[in-house]
Amino acid sequence: MRIDLSSAPGNPERPNEDWLSAAIPASGGGVLVALDGVTPPPGEVGCAHGVPWFAARLGGRLTELSGSRRDMPLDQVLAEAIRVTADAHRDTCDLSHVRTPQATVVVVRWDASCVEHLVLSDSVLLLQAPGGEVRAVLDDRLDRIPRERLRTEASADELRNAEGGFFTAAADPEVAARAVTGRTPRAQVRAVAALTDGASRWTDTFGEGDWAECLAVLRKEGAQSLIDRVRALESDPGRAHRRDKRHDDASAAYVEL
Image (cartoon, rainbow, N blue to C red; front, side):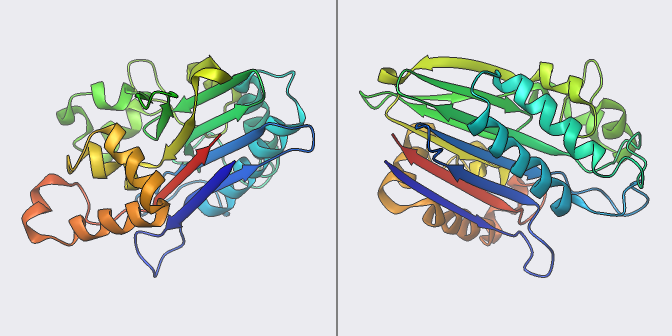
């Protein structure tokens, strides 16, 4: 088994709000978790701890539960991880605030018979078959919202974790039921990859290659190389019109089963 993880902040003067982990439990199989913490706009957020604190606690709990509670489906694992994380600051913070710390989520768990997955919001999961075919697992609710409806922070807040909008892991365990989940026979999966949107933009923003070509970069050059490629594209003045912000936290994980 080969596991390759890399993460880089969008701004070296700010904390990286992404979070990655991979674990190989003693019982066998493995777990991969990728979170993209949602950067709030300046102003009141209702929480004194911040997004990196939240992502580390949610990610740590997801990793532990995914490995130790194989009897729990991944949506239940996410619900429990959200509940425990919320309890850790419920007495000190306003968790009802629309900008309370939150994150996108990718979880992959595998054993000798099955590969399970969960995706919530706009991070990307790639599953490669033994023949080389690559399937992207996406939660595309955010992409389906017309850009004019997301023009201001106020309108985006109205759509966050709301019917007709999009969903992220914040303080409500019930959001786990909104995640995209599935199971694939282990024999049908050769490799998996998880990308936060700062890394997936190599394909979905800059169009440098399709998802199969993106996974090929990860396999041949490594996760850091994909991030380096993204940073080079972001620094190209000719690409400025194709992105909402110049740099974003970028994380990539590749697991060859």
